[in-house]
Image 1: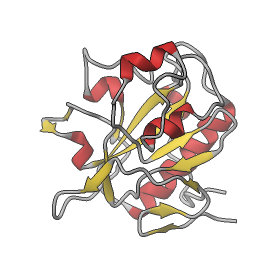
Image 2: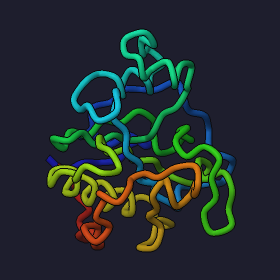
Image 3: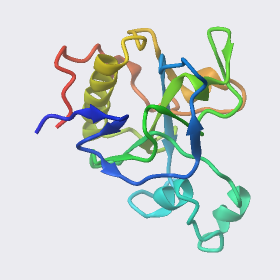
Length: 187
């Protein structure tokens, strides 16, 4: 089944709506994709921590690390799990809280004009084949719907928040993101 994008929601993604979003500024459409990584607890994959963090349901006492992020209110538009499962937290028509204090090509507040994609991972552990394949399909679909996202409009969190963030880190192979096929289909 081919994916569609309706009201900013990808039909083939598992929808987990986050309250951590707001309208984009009037007249602003996505023009940038920001790639992040996340794992909760750090270096552990497959648990419910990421979904709980993005939906404000994380039990801050469930792991010692969570005390260092206690009260954090963040989200992303998408999460690609290690096995390639795609989750969507925020409509691409809205502003997700993923980039924080940020700047891209002289424009501040990247959340206003970007789509945030989290990869379940760390800066130093290789990402999976399923993640690269899913990321290419997702970017193709987004470009089909948002022509302002061109070939040079992909950045890492470290690129938009240098000195503050390091993700997706040296483990991410940017050369794997050759322009996706014209179909931009997400199965």
